[in-house]
Amino acid sequence: MKLKYVMVVLLGLLTACGGYKQLTPKPEVVALEAGYTPILNKDKSFELKKGKKYYMTFPAALKPNFYLVLKAARLEQLNSHLTRQFTKGKGDIKIAEESAANDDLLVYKLDQTVPVFTWVIEEVLAEMVLDLDYRYVPVWRYRFETKNAEFQSILARNKVSRDNYDNLGNGVNPENLRFDEILNEIRTKSGNLKAIQGELLEIEAIFPPDIKNSDDKAYLDYTGLRQELEEELRFHENYSNVLNFFKREKETRNNNTTFSESLSEFNRFFADKSRYPEHVRRAAEKAMAQRLSTVAPFYENKIRQKRDVSPLDIPVDELEKLFKESGRASDPQFQAIAKFTRAFNRNAEALAGTRKGLNDIMARTRNSSNWPSDNFYTNLVPEMDRLLSSLPSASTAQYGQLASAPCVEQLNREALSINQQVNAAQQNFDQAAALVPQINRLRSQNDYRGIIQLLKANSQIDFLVDQYANVDRLSLEQQTAEIAAAYDSKQWALAESRLRSL
Figure 1 (cartoon, one colour):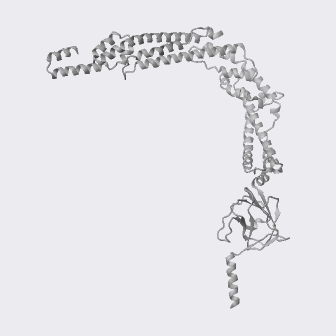
Figure 2 (cartoon, helix red, strand yellow):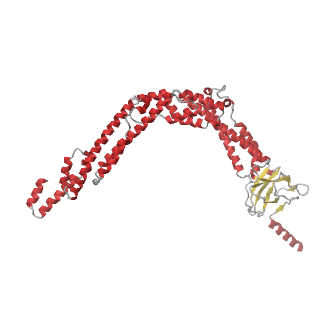
Figure 3 (cartoon, one colour):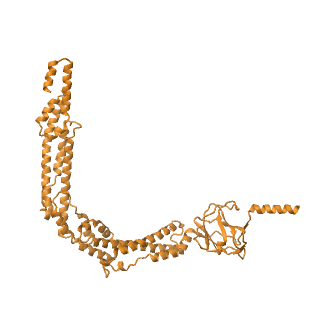
């Protein structure tokens, strides 16, 4: 009976432990950064029996961003996980395992939320000796070490040949480059390199503060790789810029219109020319000098064919900048074009502004929503004076050698016409300034017939008729009311007299 009782107690204890056996390494696990250290039971490895369950504890890392790495053969024979809280089969919360597929490692990221983590072996599929090593390693170091060879391989495969670039203009004619083919190659390879650049930056983001500028081998390998990668990407960008420059220059030949549309692109290239070697700059300057020699005849012809007064679409600022940046002095013909363009555009814009100003003022005078105040037209006098002063000068000296162009004659003709219109309007405004106070006085007396007579006497001021468009209706309403009042008061003679006058 006593023996039966003891067996029941032992069975209860085994049930309470859930059937897990603890593996206690000797020497004990140390949570310090180091290489792989074997897990031993004194001087030999642990032996695991098929179908049994085991667990082993590992202390938390002393610093954040650390991995616990377990290395063992025949891991496929073990069903295991790491947990912060071991529940003996009641449902552990498993920590994600981050190793690559099909390797002999288990990789777990540790935090500092608990002092101890537990590695749980839920099932042993075959009897085995547990040849297990462990390692505490910073996350950045492990990620870089395991990916470094891959990074180096990707970098090597995605380097672009520098032969054409290094010999451009010295044996390699830009004319003969396969622009699209090389640009597509660079685009693809740059994308591949930027992908690993992103991974390197993610690793750098978790560097511990004390690692930077140290002589740590992994850190030095990292900085060396990153510098080589960035230098290659800079070359990709520079080579692409050079190819696009010569490609665009070739595409715009014999078409000065498209060449003009590309001036800002060419200027950006030369503004950054210090990033390119001397032989590349010389080749670009030579190509651009040939192109710039054709622009002056093209634009002079454009000026001489122009008949209207719209501003000239000649980008003289961009062209002057390109002459300077490409190291070529502008020729006298182009200088004459630049002088003409600036003078003509300045005057064309002034003429357009004067015309718009006059139209705006005349629109205000034809607004019939409100009758003008006594000083309405008096206040317009300074505005008209400003319009006259803004008209361009008719002097042809400002246009230089191209003053005989038909568009200059047309601009002066239209400027004279606007001048005459402004003067005529100003004369009418002077007359209106004298009439409006009289009209407003008659209105205060409800003498609409008097207003109508005054407007008819000054019918040459056409905008006044528009401004007082409702005066006929007001007069009719007033006279109708007066006739009705006379009838109501039985003043028959007065009513008849007003009917006759109506």
